[in-house]
Amino acid sequence: MASIAIYCGASSGHDPRHLDAARNTGRALAQRGITVVYGGGRVGMMGALADATLSAGGRVIGVIPQRLMEREAAHRELTELHVVPDMHTRKAKMAALAEGFIALPGGIGTYDELFEILTWLQLGYHRLPVGVLNVAGYFDPLLAMLDRTVSEGFLSPATRAMLLAADELPDLLTQMERFLPADAEAWLAAKLRQEP
Image 1: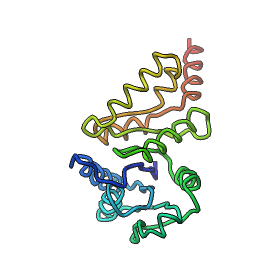
Image 2: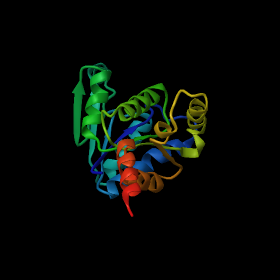
Image 3: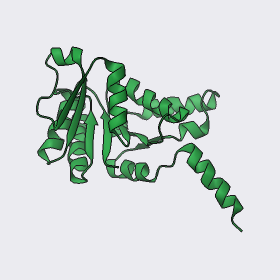
């Protein structure tokens, strides 16, 4: 993966481990030569992610809606900054620039981005890995809710398995590198059944 879109909060949250995770993620991706694609903000988790990536010599591409640009919320020292007309365009542009997607702790905007890109994967609009970095158990309730969704019959186990999760970034990146979309997995299973 040459680039990963990171979804995370414009706030820092109360737990300092969340902000540390944003910084550590930025540094780690820079060290691996992976470009960070994110929402273009200069504050909270987003700002910490961008600053740490840039400080480690990495590339950062921001995508920010015009409305937030006008409020001076944009990070002005990025490798690239794309100003787009609205949130829908922002999400599509980030998806076009990325080869994988990771959600860090954040609020409803982060959840919105995560579930939209996961839905696109389910529907076959892309075939790229989607994961959550489960910092300090932040996503435990969300993962449990998805399991409940499966048990209630609203989500297939195969679709549930599309969302990767790990407590540590190296583990998540390993899962992402090994990711096979559901149709590719089905093809591989059919091939293995044909083996003598």
